[in-house]
Image (cartoon, rainbow, N blue to C red; front, side, top):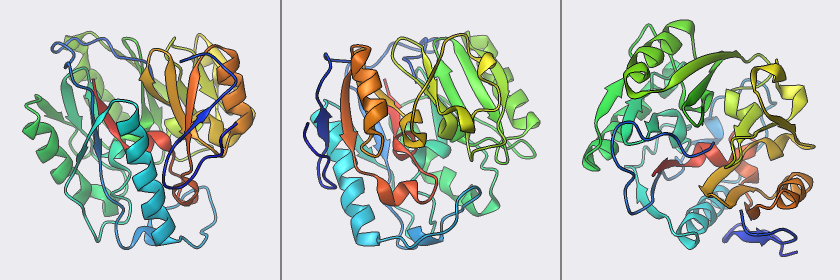
Length: 283
């Protein structure tokens, strides 16, 4: 098996080639697959923490790992679009929290942490530049994109420290006309819902049981053996991107017939980040 490097991605071998693709109720899926990314801030080490103890962050290594993540997307056929950097917003690299895509409908989030509310303006500018229709979740509603998991036409939303009932209600109102069903999920053991669970291309929800409040919420739940194995980015129907910190989980996914690409994101994991946090995929 190839070892993951900070500058490039690695293919986890041992299996066949392998958040599910949403029902596109708003418009046709674009021919080109695009992903929004955002460069790490200079003060990355000052990012918010809720469930982990603060550890030193190597900014140079984090930047190298971010570049490796972006390169992995490009290697798999994704065009990356860099959102305007925010050098003094430490959590801004976690672009997923600022805007969520439902087909070609963009929903601008309403971050639960006041320090993160400056992150959304540039994300909105980026999706408008792509010609996408935009809706917003507004205060007093709060909603972080990391609390939103799309599985087909069902949208699971974590009721967490960052996302409240009003934010969930607003999202439900926005999405009902375009065919999505919003399901609230309690989250008390992790920062976001997608810290605890994500989904494989076939709709199976994967998660680390100690981080999941109630696995029965999900019709098809697959436990993974490592906390870092909860997060997968679906690159296509047969391929997922995940952290190199979870080799046993990667083996589990290859055993189910998926092709697994791994990247080293250890500096971002120290800040409760994962592979889903670092991009927003436009399908």
